[in-house]
Image 1 (tube, rainbow, N blue to C red):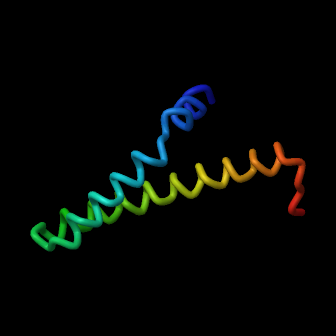
Image 2: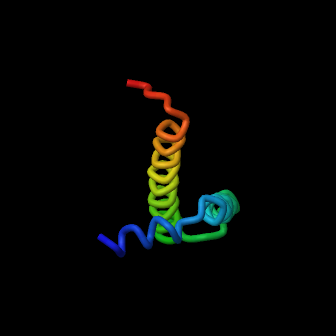
Length: 71
């Protein structure tokens, strides 16, 4: 479980977004094979999922800190 926390601490939304922009530019360029395009797409989906999880965690922390309860 400590490794899971370490990975979350090392995650940077800014770095992830930059990588997604790079993937998007490469895919838009069209100068890569279908196999490489699929690999980049899969990487992008994984990164997007990590971003979503990270942002949901931050949202929960903000709700807790602000004393709000959406439920």
